[in-house]
Image 1 (cartoon, helix red, strand yellow):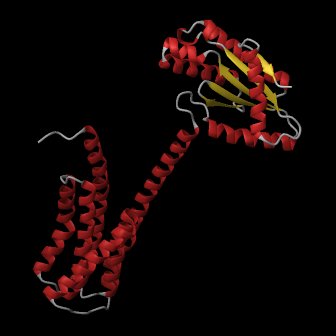
Image 2 (image 1 turned 120 degrees about the vertical axis):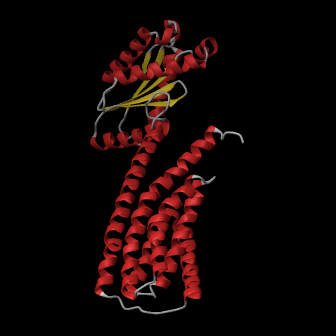
Image 3 (image 1 turned 45 degrees about the horizontal axis):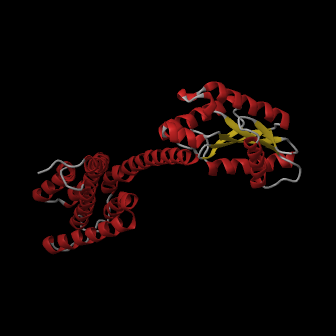
Length: 352
């Protein structure tokens, strides 16, 4: 028998986490269910065989179910089958309790509680069908008897299942919701950020640019947009390789971060091109920031690339009166960038 592939082993390990998570819940739920059923059996004077079956169900089955699921080829499928078996056994005990109203209804609801949260309506339907089949099987084997009245003693014995188990399930679900929420926030952050540079990606940067342009236009505040392009980047890739090209992009992004304020919005616009929105910044202040970035790149020689091949050209455009389209803003800065390249590169040009 060949050893499982690493991917398959990780998948099985992930599925076993479900089994481990359900194990203490099954122990608690069946212990509380034991008290609920035991109260009715005690009042009805059940036989020793019935008590033995109840003890096995309440205190042996949780460990057997875990062993079955942990050693199955698909632990998740095995655990889902175990949940259906739980419901079948619950249906049997409802019949053996002679349909005592409160314990039977409570057992039925609790058996559906975590099935719905874990597997949705499909698992709930399977569990309910198993519960009905278990109930019918018990009626066929032991006969039908109806005693729906619930005594105060039986009510007291249902309290652990009625109070403790839902609280524990609620705490577990709360932890799962927090985990999922934390993962969603992390995923949202990853979707906003360019993986190579750590700056905003183009889509996220454009959203912020629109937001800032509208706010500054409404308040009559100055703002500037810088479009930055690494000069002769194709030559860097061709002569030094794409890994070196990535290092140059990463190094330039680091310089951009150091030369801008926390309130400014830098992003990777695409390829070797960057864009920055400078809030509350006029043309002269924007030119100074652009020159600082240009000179830092020129002096930095990122990762051993010659100075002559690690320069940037920068186009600057301010928000003019009546400008409400961020794309027009970008286009003006892009035109200035082309002017900087046409004038010999490694320079700053301001749109007029």
